[in-house]
Image (tube, rainbow, N blue to C red; front, top):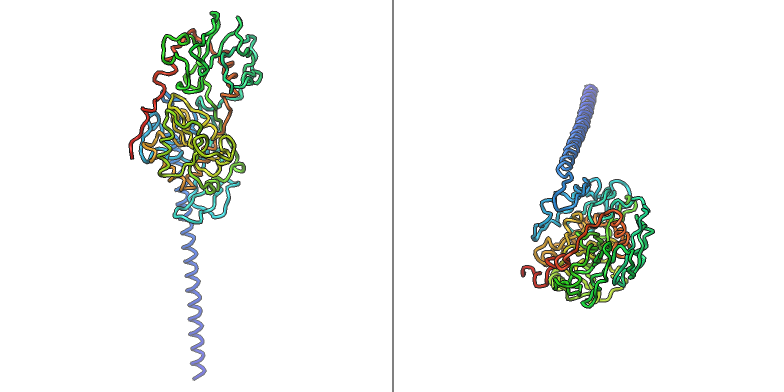
Length: 493
C-alpha cells in the first residue's frame, strides 16, 4: 500500500514537471513571437519615417528653387538656395530685432554640415560618412554630431566678390592697349601690371609717361590735390579714376566744387564700387571644397576657444562711430582691442596668432559708404583662419554674400542685441561649430587690389566697348554715398 502511494506521488510529480516544461516553452515562444512582431513594427515605422523625410526634402527642394529677383545677382545654384533657406523675404531690408535672422543658420543638406540627433561619445570627425563628435562632459545641452562633412559648397556664388569661371583660356589679340598711371599709390606694386599672367596679355604699362599712343590714363583719386592739373589728352585717349578709399579720404576740391577742373574729366571709373565701369574689390572669395578627411574637427576647435571677440583697429575716431559701438558691446561681452587703438598683439601685423582663441572677429569699416567692403572682412578667409566675422559697414552684405557666411550687425537694433547674440552663439559649441564650418567652405581667392587690378583693366578693354561719357565726379563719387557720423545712431538701452 505504501509502495502504491509512493508510485502515485512520483507520477503526479512527473506530470506536474512535464506541465511546467510545456508552460515554460509556450511562454518562451510567445516572448520570441512578441519580440519578432515588435521588431517588424519598428522596421515598418522606420521605413515610413524615411519615406516621409525624403518627401519633405523633395518638397523643400521644390520650394527653394533658384529665383532671380530684381536688384540682386542671379546665383542660379540650387545648393546655395538649400543652404540659405527661405531668406528672400528678408533680403534687402532685414528684419531687425533681438532675435534676428542670423539665428537661423542655413538648413543642413547633402552639401552642408548635417547634425545627427544622437551622439556616440569619443567618435572623431576625421573620416567616414556619419562621423560624430564627443559629447560635452558638462552642461545641460546635449551636443549633436557633425556628420557627413562633405563639401558644403560645390558651385560658385555669383557675385562681384566671388571668383567664378576661372579656367578661361588665355588670348593674345593683335591690338595692343597702352596704360599710363598718374599718381600711382605707393602700396600698389608695379607687378600688378604684369599682364603676362592675365587672360589677356596685350596690354602695356607705361608708368607715369603719357605718349600720343597711350589709350588710357589712370588717376588715383586719393592722390589728387587742388593745384594738380589734368594733362591734356588726345581725342582717342581716356581718363579713368581709380579709388579704393572712402570719399572722406579724397582731398581734391571737386568733391565740394562742381566747377573743379577735374570734375568732368573722367571717362571711366575703376573703384571698389560694384557699379564702377571696372569694379575692383579689395579681394574675392572662392569655394573651398574639402573631403571628409581634410576637414578639421570644428566642434573641438569651438571648445578650445576661450575668448569671445577680437577687434584689430588702426584708426580710432572715424565716421562710422565704430569705437562707440564696440564700447557699448563691451558692457555685455569681452571684446579685446588690438592695434593703434588698443593692445599690441603677438601675431604680426593683424594679430594672426591671436585669432585661434577668439570666436568672432569684428570687421567694422571706418566709413558707411556704398559698397565699401575692405580687407577687414576678407582677411578672415585666409586658410586656417577659423573665426567667424561680424560685419558692420555700408556694403550690401545681404545682397552679395551667402547667408550665414558672417554675422551682420545691421540685423540688430542695438550693440547690446548684437553682443547678446554673440554671447548666446559662443556658449553653444555645436551651433558655433556648424556656422564656422560653413564660413570655412569659402576661402580667400585673390588679393584683387594688389595683384589682379591690371588684369581686370586689360580684360575690360578687350571685352567691352567704352562709351563716350564724362562723369560728374562730385555726384558719382560722393553725393549720397556715405553717412556722416551725425547720421549714425542706435536706440539707447
